[in-house]
Length: 501
Image (cartoon, rainbow, N blue to C red; front, side, top):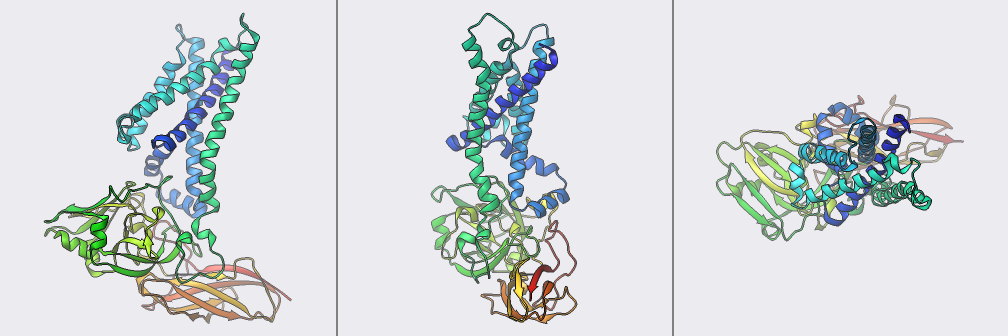
């Protein structure tokens, strides 16, 4: 067999063995909780990706972004393991002492255990995930080496005196391994990917927005492929750093403190103009100002740093915390404990700021003398992240059909953080003329406003509708369109409606 054919066969066997390894990684996550390498590599890749590129992907892909990222990392890993198989097959042809497949598998293990796992934050040999993690990785690459040996050894396809049935089984084995591995991987990943892209919570709402978003439809965004699941029994909130009275508060301790309940609208900084990554809820928690006061800040403390269970970090100036008592350590949403996806057991709630300033799965608050920013700030996103004035149509939707001479109802929401909304206007001729919409009473100064209007199109044709708002200070919504990176999207929500005769 020519060297080229041997290398191609080795690459194919490496792909099959890599597919098995990746499938076993995800099954190991289900069984014992070890994190698959494609998920571990997310943060190092984000660290080197230019912020504007990531911002473009977020704006374009929204919830599908993480699916595309994970799928790309899986494909890249399988191709890399295929290349390792091709290198092994080549070495068997040209080296004086043909190497065993396990020796190349060991080389792959070394790259992962000594390089990729440490830079991903999983520690040397993956020990950050427990003492059994190195053994798991050894077994995964042993399985890879075994399949590579069977599928890529030229001896299995060179005419030899062997039982024909045995040779047939050996030739078919890679196909069976590939089919089983692909099936297992699809069964693990496809439901989660489908849920992320097509069944996002906010996608379940249609028509006019309710004043309070049901928990099941409250938008969810996180940096994680899999969010942490935190047990209330083993959790405590630590308040330390530059303080005279460090705190360790259990969930019972936190609930026993004086609490407040607020109606707050949250918006993701990656929400597109007219997008659905915005929701309103009733949050209950403890004022962050009160917790900081209990810890007795040192004279040189100027900032509060937050650390979350998933490694997320964020910070707020103490001056802001003191001047805005509505900033909470929240533990309930709409009268019930925070759901896991919303940060159980506790999260920071910073009204008037984009959601990135409110870490979920909060573990600690550390007072410091300088502002080190946070997770997304390190990727170039806005450090202050104040909500921009925004407005949108809920009804009609882009592409809807109305009838000439009949009243068409226009409904939507407008939001400007803690500044409130003083006016909403709509246009039915692409922005040439504007009319005032009616405003509902907001639930609080921290929530969106529901607006409505009635429009009677006089003749058939295509109409361009736009909406804009003015905040409570009199400042108008920015008309210039901009992407969400780095400070949040801006521009007027624009839809097209066809009017029939």
